[in-house]
Length: 349
Image 1 (tube, rainbow, N blue to C red):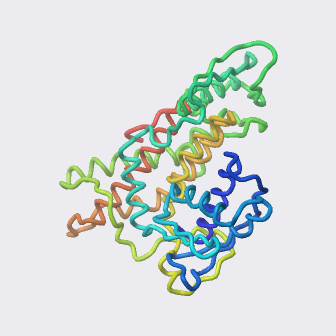
Image 2 (image 1 turned 135 degrees about the vertical axis):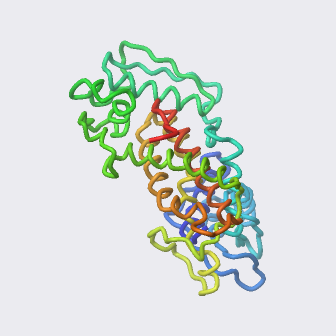
């Protein structure tokens, strides 16, 4: 976890505490991280509890205890210790350990990774006009609602509650998969493009990139089986992972800390974010968010694929098994996401 990601994680803990009624305070715009001071411990420290105590009309230690409980549930956080008047000292899980745990979780749940209970027990009524795009969007929303434990009822009539910009022409000539993608990928307020561009097998076609990445993963699993090895989460064996290009958080730490918490593998963030994407897409009735997220996953996955199998006389090792497991996990996310959009995830392409 990078300092920028940890800063957002702490801020998210504050927001969740406010939403739950545990704190009556406006969340700050940013959270400052520093090295732990004298008497502190862990990788980073923050004084956010001290900053919130006065406006929340609560003792700093009370605020710190609330935030500590929230942070202990966060991905990538190993431990949180409150020291002094209310400093939060945060210890992070090792980067490779975090990715390994994430891959294990995805493989355990398969295509249902990311399902939650945000809409458990609720019935969502979707009233749509008699129009092809509205029907397709409503169908995808109903699938997404089900991932969060809810049930959707699609009706026609007034008042309309789901009215995306209509398709300018009949998308049926594109075929079922490309037609659904053409209608679901744009935001509801954007006019969909019904063109043959959705059919070309080139990297300029987002749907092709997603389905190609999934098909490549399936091919790698078959090839690995032929070579006599299987997927097993573990260390990837790369010297370092590429940076994310994100701006640094408002943090101060030495070069050793920077080295030990360098940027994660490009797949880690989108895979870890998948449950949130499903929850948001379901609760806001926005399958386009899932479509764009799948493209992010595919684009992060494609550079990994040539590094999975051993080359030449090289023997399959721990790193190859770990890379195969990571690719398999990303492929499961792609397959599950495409299924929720009503689009086939092919074994061959």
